[in-house]
Image (cartoon, rainbow, N blue to C red; front, side):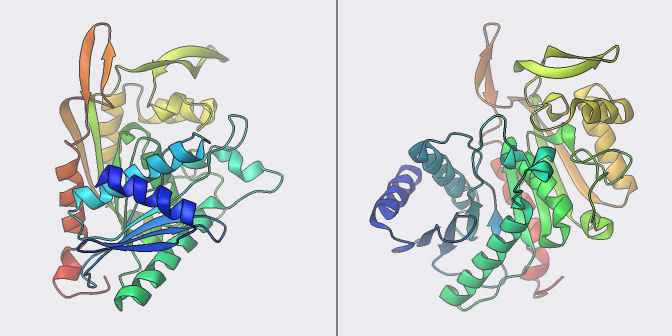
Length: 334
């Protein structure tokens, strides 16, 4: 359905359509009015024992056709992994220039714009709109807490959105960002901690079900523009591309340095330490390392690595099933 969905959305855009019914499948919506546009899939049949699945788009490209194709792929991912039984929402986070806030990872500099946009609040409002639309179209009100997932940048977005609106999330299922789990302490600055955030609901945050996964070969893909602090001097250095603690566009290098000094320099030791910290705080967390897989399909030094794609499907499916377990048991609000 992926290519078909892309073509459907492009056709809807060209025709100015907001909603289209696909017989035997459900309704696809492309809502452009409001501060933040979004895509929404609603199954043909649904009841309150399902949750709204949310994943932000993960594309910096300002080419509208490329942007829409990637968003369609994200919508299809949720539809496919969950066999079309759950509604799927894709907020369309704007792609910015390199010298502008990195909204797709909720970077710190979004707080310091001349005319700041509150993207977390805009996404929260889009979630509420989606729940209202589903209720209007299917005569069922879903639980207010959502299943939020993401991989790579959309995973980073999800883990940081949870700091702003933990009350909105039942389960956070994140891939490819295990080494940068935020710690709910103000001794580390946002986005790797909660220092500097004016409001943070620690109890609501720790009530989230956390499901993290990462490929065993996450570190093979290096980027040469990452920042590290060596002898007090900030330098460009080759570091694992998806270790966000070295990514200055997303995390202040001094915040990354403090985080690593407290949690650990070695990525996978850090992942274990983070899981231990969360468990000590009383959180429901599972962190999985997928053997033999890298962040994505790639070739490094003559060696081919397969990405975690498809191997993540059962992790996401099981996490979703666990998320709706109480709803299936007849407890609509938990």
